Amino acid sequence: MQKLEEEYQEKQRQKNSAEEEEEECTSSSIKSALNRVEDGEERFLPRKEVIRRLRDRSEPILLFGETEIEAFKRLRRLEILEPEVDRGFRNDFQEAMEKVDQAYLDEILKSQGTTDDGKSINDVKIEEEGTTMEEIKTMAIDLGKGNDNYDIKVILAFLKFLLQLWGRKLNSRPELEKTSVKGKLASATYTQTQAYLRPLLKRLKNRTIQEDILAHLVIIVKLLLNRDYVKASDSYLQMAIGNSPWPIGVTMVGIHARTGREKIFAQNIAHVLNDETQRKFIQALKRLMTQCQRFYPTDPSRSVEYNA
Image (tube, rainbow, N blue to C red; front, top):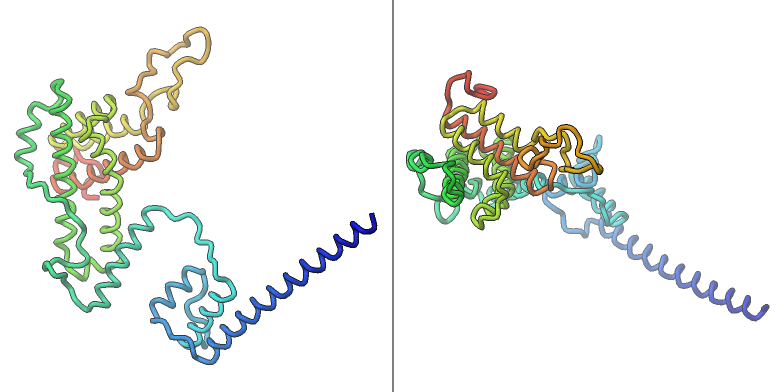
């Protein structure tokens, strides 16, 4: 028993000595890195990069009486002492904003307003379809008459047309407006809407869209083409929120059928609650409806938040 205890004590002493040596090596490397920062041997970063890194760490970009060089040295000390920063969960809107910010930074670094093909570096990406509103209205005459494939074709053309129209409007802005905070926010919103709509467009192309969602989309597109935005908004809410007494979709809660069970149908279910993908493209559809009202205004009595 005593022998086992001695072996255990010896192993603990070896472990402690190894940990102490590792700590000494780490502290010496940190000290040498800090000395390089203090002696000015580190290559100085651009001021904008220093500000960005300090903000990522929730640190003040400049202390009272501090010079820009001292702020850089403070940043390097923080990065050496605390290399990992917990930035938390990041949503896709933040990522879209960062892409727009990066494009703006690249433009400043290049000191050019255009790319090789003559387009502004702050322009949003547009998928040109070459469809006009008159053609879509002509196609929409037979919309909702029982031919699902034809309905999908019209809905696809209309959604892509609205996206194209919105993108052209953003790209036609002055360069100063594009690089403003409000302009970058509008570009990021457009980029996010494109990403959100992609699953819906894919389901429409592959003919895998749910029948109840397709039925709602047919009604919404017809009302938008007739510029009846109030009723279109009502149909949108019917699709997104639904009016089912059981929003999760429960149809049987016991042995006996309950009162109001006949009201529980797929068309009454809140699709916005089904999954995250559906929530996103339903949200993107609402943005396109808002843009449609801005491009094709009508009487105030048929508009939602007129002149908003």
